[in-house]
Image 1: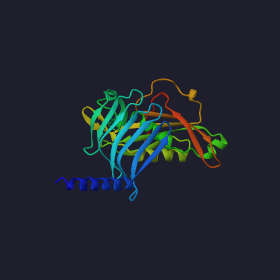
Image 2: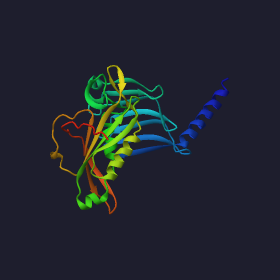
Image 3: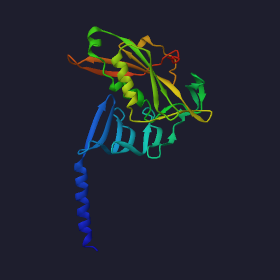
Image 4: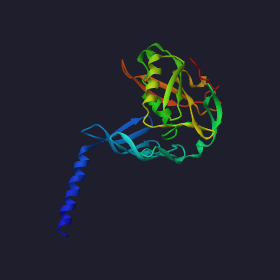
Length: 267
């Protein structure tokens, strides 16, 4: 029995080494956040532990696991400002294990008859990520066309997204168009978000809901009102600078209040 133990230990060490050699650690820095995950060298799939780190505070604001590039098991997300738990979501069971008090009944844009209205809901629409992750992902992935910097073009794009009772984005409308390329990018980013939407709950039932993404490209931040930002409106101030003849670099972004509430248009 004792003679077998060294062999088992050696076999385990070799197996661990082979697995370690098969996986590559990848780090991506976007703004103040760093994503760290493992990639299977042979398949390109994400495997194992994943985390998002706030490089200012060094806090881990998202932690979970991948299997063949799919999120599995429990994932924990934090509020970066307070470091408190924001969401715990089980991707294997497809259900929330914990939601922060921030998701207590609130007003949200939901389907009412043939239209959308602001209603006091049991639970607003929720994106499964750390607080303000949706803002961060949209802002960091948008590439502003170089000609806008060269020509000094500035403007605002407003898109309206409709999420069904199952949490799927079913429709997008351009409320105010500024640049087709930017609006297409925002749409693509939202459609390919790695997390999930939990549908709004109204009178105990999941309902269709609506949210907006408003991107201010180049206009002074002071141009916008400082009233409270409704939870169904994401406002981004995108700031870029030219770093080459054909490329741009985002210097940063900020979320600012927006008023008044904008009602969805209907085709």
